[in-house]
Image (cartoon, rainbow, N blue to C red; front, side, top):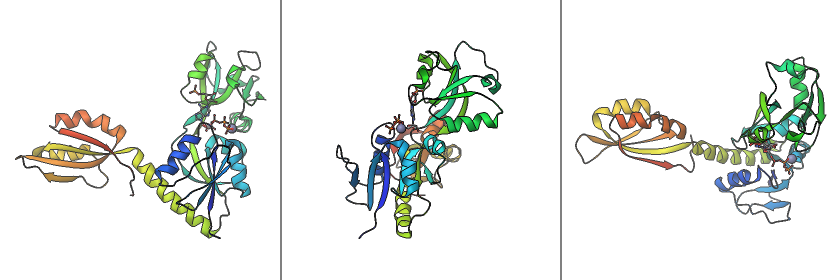
Length: 286
Ligand code: PRT
Ligand code: ZN
């Protein structure tokens, strides 16, 4: 029988869309039929298991799944031995301590003797121990942010993304304990065949991820200013420069990080750049 790599994805929730989009951008076709827990790709040797995110590290560690996509926060909390293959750059969030907005805060010793509500007792306990803080941890499974308001705790330790949930519950973030994002994890004892499929998958994932933050830029520049413009446009290797029919002008092509683009656009215009086109890149193999 042909070997397939079993990959565990969240069946619904914050990781689902981005995980499916990543496979799609990798050219891997998978269709999730409602109710079905398993889906086979039609064009890549991969089988997708759709699970709750909390179960993914255990299933990967046990070998029920070979690999999976899950938040670093869940992997750390589970304290399970799996290999982190790649950070995937989506579902970014942080695990933070937050206290009532009106309270003064100087440092972590604030939490001595306090009751902290959380769904992440393991990560919190480790942090408190490292900082010699003795607090009372109340483990609750959801709606942690309402605990101080109903008198269940003095403070919370929870996932923060935009921070608006904290604001609407009159809380303020005082310590960032862990920065999290989605990870591709794998079982530590994959067969050679499965490792090969994982490497093929990883090659595609990296090509997609390299492309995501970058844009292809084309611009017309006065020939006299080429050196100055190249100095502020660090391309993949060196930019492509082609003469234009118009005397004294060139067309310059390069790759630029999207964030860098906005910071150099003013300088490019000052140096006489015109007709600037910024185009998305689908895959980028370095
Ligand atoms: O059903 P299942 O168990 O699979 O899903 P789940 O409900 O446990 O998880 P889900 O889908 O909510 O989140 C999956 C993963 O997404 C988490 O483990 C994190 O790694 C990541 N992630 C990223 C987040 C957030 N951003 C996030 N904002 N997980 C939760 N939140 C919640 C947070 O709990 C808080 O209530 O959103 C609120 C805060 O958001 P802001 O934007 O108001 O700060
Ligand atoms: Zn969950």
